[in-house]
Each structure stands twice: as structure tokens, then as C-alpha cells.
Amino acid sequence: MHTIRFFAFLLLLGLFSSCEKAIDLKLDNSAPQYVIEGTLSGEAGSAKVLISQSKKFTDDNSFIGVSGARVSIESDGNVYQFDATGSGVYQNTALKGLPGHTYSLTVKVNDKTYTSVSTMPQPVALDSIYVVDDEFSTNKDKTKQRLATVTYKDPTDVQNYYRFIQYIDGVKEKTVFVDEDEFTNGQTVNSRLNFNNDNDAPSREIRTGKQLTVEMECIDKPVYKYFYSLTNGASGDGNNAAPSNPMSNITGGALGYFSAYSITRKTITVPAN
Image 1 (cartoon, rainbow, N blue to C red):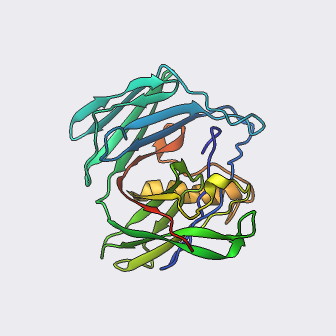
Image 2 (cartoon, rainbow, N blue to C red):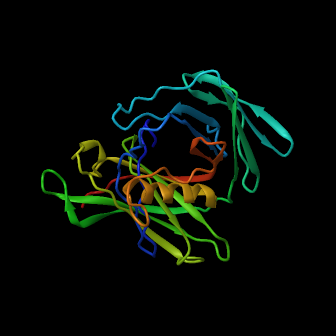
């Protein structure tokens, strides 16, 4: 997700919707920019900000954190300071977000100030997850690839935006899936989390007996637009003839995003076919 690495998210709408495809965002050879990734949920330890710098696309994707930043989040007149817990990693272990509240992030580094605002949506319950066979893809051993499908009831008369994160035996799937309810408002949604295991990595395969976990994040519109533009910009789709940077919700010239999100998750043991 930056250089650091960006992973793309492909949106498809409908009762059976999916996102797929993991690709690196290739930045041009312009001067390095700060990359800020801020997250906050209602869970302990979620208040975290990662700060790094972009690189030329010919460089490796190692994470080189930026030290010496001052990081804080303000909400309802209260200011919460973050501590440096590693190179480029800043946390406030006591801070938990509340749905319906707005949070303002401020990052000060090398005489520059970057800000972002995110409102935490009300949570939507992830009702169930199950596994289906992919009719069109196979694993390296020629068995059918299996895919996770999530089921949830989208609230009526509210615009909702979702991000799904998948783990296989605790290993995070690098493809990240996003969706919105333009055509599914108020409906029960079954969304298939398609992805392409193009490197045939066994850790990515959904196999009998493995632990499958799916997290569903309810995100606000600016964060959704960031992930959606990441898909189109990174791949050069739509009106973009070449890869470009995603639509950041951070002001001041930094790349990245800040997301205050609500979260639910489900875990199953993958059954036999």
C-alpha cells in the first residue's frame, strides 16, 4: 500500500459482489512524499498511525519508518497524544473510538503539518461466512480454488461503505475487498471475496481444516473513495492512462489515509467439499 506496498481493491456491485487483484502502486520518480496510514476502531490497540516516505518505483518495498513525528487525535474537545512504539509507528493504547463520533488526526513532522478527519459509522453485523468453489479458478494441484462468501443485512435508508479483510490460519490476505450499497440498500447481501492466487502461495489457499477469519469494517465515504481510487489509479483503469496515486483523505500533501471504522468478524473452520 505505498512503497511500502499498496494493494488494490476491485469493486463489483450486486447481491453477489466481489473485489480482487493485488498489484503494486508504482509511483513516479518525483520527490519522496510522506505516507500516513491511520486507523481507529472501538477495539483496544487499534489507534495506530504508520508514517513512512514514498520511494521510486525502482526501489525495494521495505518499510522505512519516519521518526520524530508528533501525532494526536482530537474528538469532542479531547486531545489524545500518540507515543512512538517503533520506527515510524505511533500508538495510543488507551484510545477507543465510538460509532457516530468524528475524529481529527494531526501529524507534525519536519515543520510540516498533515490533518485528516474521519467519522466512525454505526456497526453492521456480519451474519455469517461460508465457503464456495470457484467455477473458473484452480490451485496449483488442479483442485478448485475455494472462496469465502460473507452474508450481512444492509441497513435501510443509510449509505453504507464496507471493507473486508480475510485471514487464512492467521495469515492476512493481501487483497483487500471493498463494497458499497448503491444497489443493495436495505437488502440481505451475499458478497463473494474473489482473489487471484497468481503466485500459488499455499498460505492463501482456503483448504479443508484451515481457519478462515473475515473482518468487516464499516468505513466512511472518504475512506471508501480512497480504496476505490486506489484500484482505478493503480491499474490505470477508467480515465487514467497510467498508474497514479489514490485519492487521499489527508490534507497537506501526504499520501495515505485515516480511517475511523467499526468492525465485526467471524471465524470458521473450513469444511470438506
